[in-house]
Image (tube, rainbow, N blue to C red; front, side):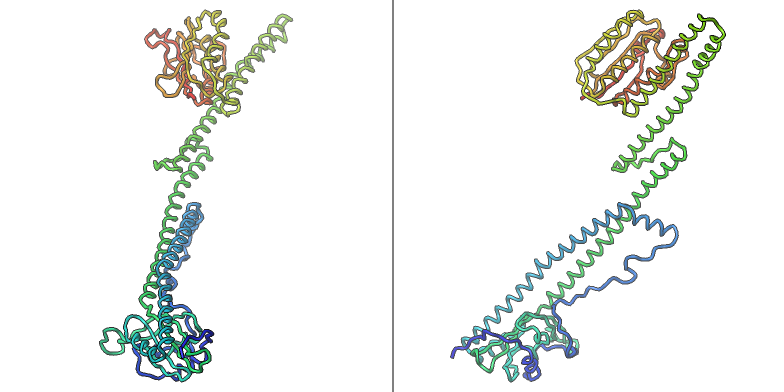
Length: 547
């Protein structure tokens, strides 16, 4: 009768326990360690982790030093740079974990599946031998395979007698009692390949196996238990070493991340502290303080440069405000005193004197209103409100319009007004403000170019700066001395030679404000450097960036 495998296999259960107790045969090559306690819970995994927790002295969260050091450390931990560094550390640690899982699946996972496939293949071969040639041939094949020292583990038991017919194990592994037909991991003892005598000749190994029942027929009372396994000690030990390596890499990643995060935080705190010290000094009234630049060229350096520029602007505005207050008190005190004296005298005079006093007072009042309007215009322009909407404008067209507008006044004052315009690219600006700047320059030349006869306005592409258009107004009057050119751009500044001329000293200040609003440069120079001192003239150049 042809033998075949039982299609409906039952759990091993009590049968296996009974067979294990009754098993007796020649001493096997391999056996289970005698120190293994009976009734110990079976291990579900063949991998015995060797990873342990950190030593107490290496544990994170060590108690920081008291006092200032603790406060400084806590401050470092609260910085944004430290939090960002920790976020990158977490991401990198997760990446290391994912890489470890990938390495495991690509190596140990594949090797484990190959081991299981090899065990299944051997069971199929033994089942085929049993089906074709019977139990005697199966016993011989198992005995021959057990004699090989190639990592294979075999055991053939006759059931229900429990006699061990062949194999290199003395008893079934305890883990097989609950494994049913599934794969399971177990441990066993084996003599070393090069025994030198003594107890050290025995070593504990790890294996993975599977047990199967072979029946001659489905209703046969006797059957054979065939156990097939493989020695996986080298693989499991390599897995343990790899796990320890990945764990150490993760710890190193966290440690390096902590060090880098603390370093970044400390560097950032130094720069932030520099900004805070500067802010406290400025709040205390020292507007000259600036943030020290490190020369790193990074974004914090750019921030420091922009903050210093802002502080320069604030200092300039505050200084200008003080100067305005002082100049208003100085320059407006005289007209107010004259108005008071004139009105007091008119109260005692006749109608004609009263009428003259009212007329002069009206003129003084209009001059004061013009002064305040000029101050308001400068303030609005410097705040950005008076600039209005910037658009592409043609400086040549604006210069032509202003020349036509001022030509009658120039002729009446005895000046020749000349326009020299070359084709130029448009600039981004306010037509009204540029027209006002040209008007102020014309008024300044008509008032102070005493003895001159010619006023020129020129518009042309800059020969010294790339992508720039120059607007120049020149006269042939006495000009402004070199040491006073920066001074005359300030508010209420009038040279002593001009004190007899009407004016508030705000014309060039307004021009300078308009130039700053357009991000243009303003320079003063001699119009005719080789001429006499009385005819050198003043050359005012406004260089606009071209579109």
